[in-house]
Image (cartoon, rainbow, N blue to C red):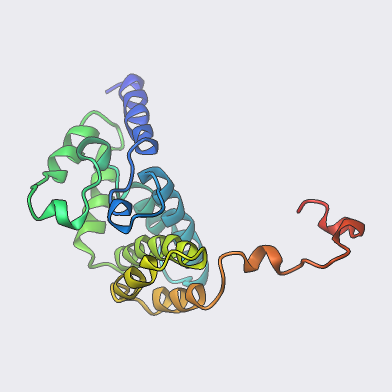
Length: 196
C-alpha cells in the first residue's frame, strides 16, 4: 500500500464528473453527472445532519459522498437497463478499495448504505432521492411537464420523516424563490445586495 494507490483512487473517483446520470435520457430534459448528483446528495445529508442531531453526521455525509463510487467502474444504469444487465458493484468496490489504507472503511460505508438498515443509511437513501427531487422540481418550474410525472413516483420512495418534510418544502416553493426573496426595484442602491 502506497500513496500512489491513493492517487490512483482519486483519479478514478474523479471520473464520476464525466459519467452522466442515465435516467435523464428517459425524461428527455436535464442532465447531470454522477459527481454533480453526489455533491447534491452530500449537501442534503449535511443539512439533514443539522436537523437530526441524533444521527452520526460524519457517517451520513461520508456515506452520501461515496454511495455511487462503483459507477466509476460500472457506469450509471437506470431501471430499464438494470432489467437486462447484471452489474457486480461489490467486486467493483472490492477492486477499487483493496490497495487503500482506508479501503475497509469505504467498503463498510457502501455496504451499510446498500443494506439500508441503519438510521444513517435510511437518511442517506432519502438524501439520494431528495437530490433527484430538486432536479425534477427545477425542471418542472422551467415548464418541463414530464418532470411532474416523475416527481409523483420519486416522492413515494422517501421513508424518513425528515425526508418527507424536506420534500414537501421543496415541492411547495419555486426553484428561484431564494434568489427573489430579497429582490426589490431599488436593488442597485442597496449596498447589502451588492453580491447579487
